[in-house]
Amino acid sequence: MANHKSALKRIRRNEAARLRNKYQHKTTRNAIKKLRGLEDAKEAATLLPTVVAMIDKLAKRNIIHSNKASNLKSSLTKHVTKLAA
Image (cartoon, rainbow, N blue to C red; front, side):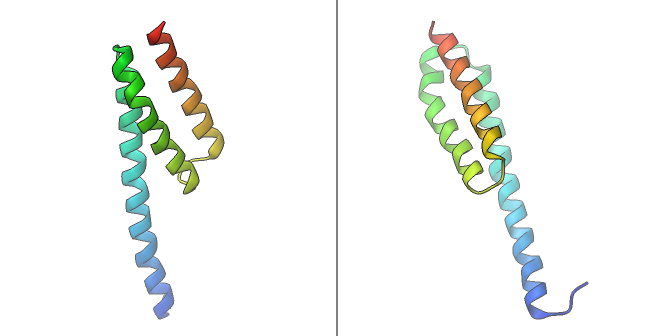
């Protein structure tokens, strides 16, 4: 284990960031699952912008890759438009 003061602080910061990233990622995955499970087009259309914003935030913070974010947003948008039709 590191003995330098800065290294010990870095370990604490990394753990805090890991927990924060894990929480945000899990919350977003649950929101995606909820959106995919919806059958009501109106409710899905109102939830979509919130989920897209959550996905964008994860991509911006490098929690997920930007291409994965694009693929998720695309598939969710297709799902919502299919419900509306």
